[in-house]
Length: 215
Image (cartoon, rainbow, N blue to C red; front, side, top):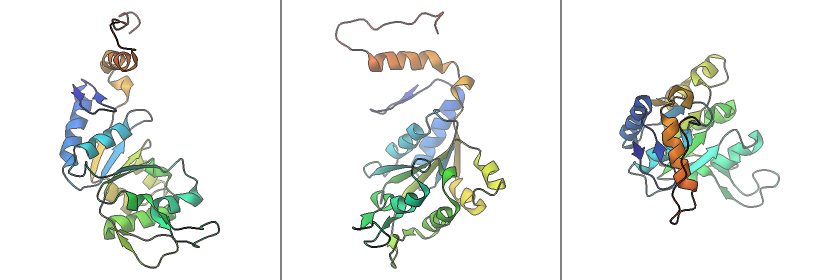
């Protein structure tokens, strides 16, 4: 089965994966926060975009933020924005990613890497539906759907004191766990065919085939 999406469809015939997609479709219609867990490369962002595309918010922004790729000192400003003069180098006001995602969906990728002080601020966003720019004194209301992903077992991360327990339960309203490809090897021929079609030059040339021995 191929869940239709122009850019990055979900290609699978695996029963476990199809069950995850069905759960994702059910989750899409609600406002509930979704936590997607799975190893690197299993397609967590693809699934997050699939949820957004099938949600009532699909005509609104989808904003993705990789919490592991942004230095800790910049992540707060990136997410919440800042006022002019809030800190050295803040020569203009900046709108943060939460405001960009207003009425849409924000994906917080690798949420386990978010520093503890920012976790407290994220908890406030979930509870109060408002954000406060760095250097501001007045909150800004936001209406957004939060999807978080992690390649760690977030419950273990919480038990180790590296992630807030109250935030974990706020994020884990709808948990989705993506199995790695080694546990759904039947999808390998489907994916091979998908990528051959995607990257072929087209025209009248026949599509290349991969031998069964190679598969």
